[in-house]
Length: 296
Image (tube, rainbow, N blue to C red; front, top):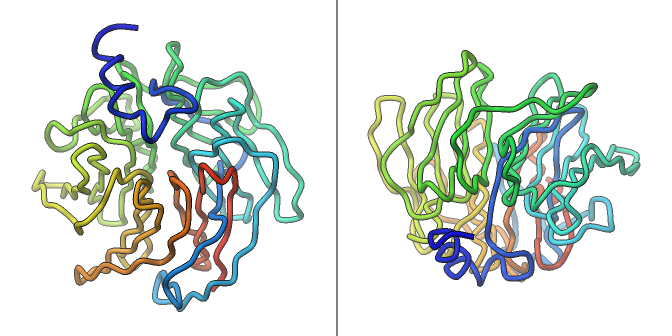
């Protein structure tokens, strides 16, 4: 391990102590990945997403996870989990059946799924093809190159892949034609990334405790405030942003008008957050070893 990696490990100790702090990105298909859902969401009296009011009714998704890091949901309601401690990507079907999509990974972290159920995963400790995807059938496919300890992964409607290249302190886009494009400026160990319908990119500037928005024209602004090691991100159809505020043990929503709402607290280092088409919120409640869904 070189000096730079050692520094990253030390700086990330609070968030990654059980597994170390090296990262890589992989893509998996065959459904969406899910990450731990919050066990014990408390605090706010309600939740909202895409204009839908949310209450505190929660459902645990699957079981047997160890330090889940990322979560994604496909159009059929399958939940995909980056099961970090077990080195696997798992799919939880609507009927509760759990299928292992990929195993033998080294700290799978961020995850995303496309319309064809190709699953993209960021595997923090992988050295070979650190960004890859797993199609429903066949071996994994390498995505891009030159990443160093990548974590967060996101997709846009065109099929472009966005990556939080943690060790290189950058956000990047791998276009459908394979071209790699840098998004925004130099960051401080970015962990999460998301993109909205207008192609604005949101990045968790994790060790700077900020979230940044980068417009298609390259304008960079800060979104929200008061975060402590923000990690996974999600954006709903209305443009509201959801932040896994990991060291504050909460999920927060930044409304399009700028108001910040704490959707829940009492979590333990949540690293992943996503939404389904009905506005349900899924959370990877990492140190509770759980994945949960908050129903509208």
